[in-house]
Amino acid sequence: MKTFFLIVHTIISVALIYMVQVQMSKFSELGGAFGSGGLHTVFGRKRGLDTGGKITLVLSVLFFISCVITAFVLTR
Image 1 (spheres, rainbow, N blue to C red):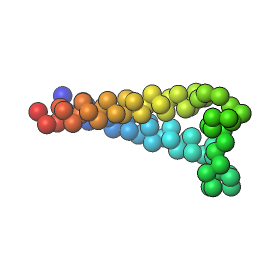
Image 2: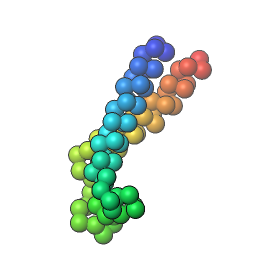
Image 3: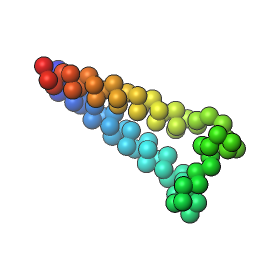
C-alpha cells in the first residue's frame, strides 16, 4: 500500500513539474524576466485559464491531496 501511494505521488509530482515548466516557457521573453506577465492579470487581454493552466491547477490540487494521504499512510 505504501509503495502504491509513493508511486502515485511521484507521478503527480513529475507531471506537475512538467506542466509548470511548460507554463513558464510562455513568459520566457524579456518582459517576463521583469514580472510583466500581463496575460494573467485582472485587466489583461485574456480572461480565465487556458487548458494548460487548468491542468496545472488540477495537478496542484491532486498534489496537495496526495501529500496528505501519503504522509498519513507512511506514518501508520
